[in-house]
Amino acid sequence: MELDMVLPETAPSSKKNTDIIVFPRRTPQSKKKTKKAVVFFEVEILDAKTKEKLCFLDKVEPNATVGEIKAMFHKSHPQWYPARQSLRLDPKGKSVKDEDVLQNLPVGTTATLYFRDLGAQISWVTVFLTEYAGPLLIYLLFYFRVPFIYGPKYDFTTSKHWVVHLACICHSFHYIKRLLETIFVHRFSHGTMPLRNIFKNCSYYWGFAAWMAYYINHPLYTPPGYGEDQVQIALIIFLFCQIGNFSIHIALRNLRPPGSKTRKIPFPTKNPFTWLFLLVSCPNYTYEVGSWIGFTIMTQCLPVGLFTLVGFIQMTIWAKGKHRSYLKEFRDYPPLRSPILPFIL
Image 1 (tube, helix red, strand yellow):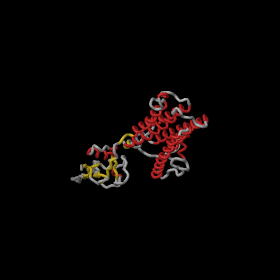
Image 2 (cartoon, helix red, strand yellow):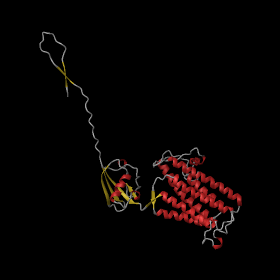
Image 3 (tube, one colour):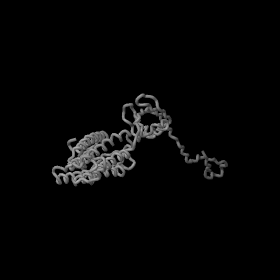
Image 4 (cartoon, helix red, strand yellow):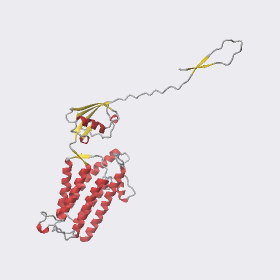
């Protein structure tokens, strides 16, 4: 503390001594920077099946994400890259999300996470491109009647029925649209899926494409019973549902910003094809089924009808799962919506 010396006013001459008054000088005190003590976490990773300790991480920052913990675990176990890991709070529980923060999880400063190997992974984009490119190419092989399919006398010949050519255009349009949507429209919440799924999915799409194409492009194929009227009505249904399906995919894409995994309630936009959101949670599946119903009516082919039925069953399962997820996540989710068919299913 510094001192200021202040002399009093001049006293009467009779007083020889003067008093010196000392005042403390008020100087601004320097602000002391107090460092906040960081409490580091310890993370123990156990095998979900055997409860064997696989890894122990000390001095993990409390704001570390699960994705960062996976990266740390990967350093000690290179065979399990992050996309292959499933970390859980309970051995039989659900996986925690990569974006979850450690200090926000219901764990203490010593956290125990259970690891499960998801198996070899492959990107969703690769899976979709493989799934959709196969049916496109396979169908065209039957349409152009390449050798060893229908017999030598039919090699590289064309069908005499115009509906066969229209069916090829519609089928090709559908899968070209899917390929372009995969590249330019879709945003995936999960980057990868198990590698084994690509064999199952490709068997489904490629097998049905070959079965349908074989009968539609067969030299003995007969056109629909009600002729041009049936084909024209089916074409309108097909095109209407294709546009609707594309509109829903665009609406869902705009709902999620690039690089984000945030989930929001989808609502109708100014596009009339999205108004189906008022009654259905997954209108993209509704339009998809409608497209294949139109294609079935157009070709009047049993394998196409079976493909439509199997696809409807599978999409209904997916739609019900998404509908339950919406109801669980959003308390204000519209109560009038059904999973895939308005007021029915």
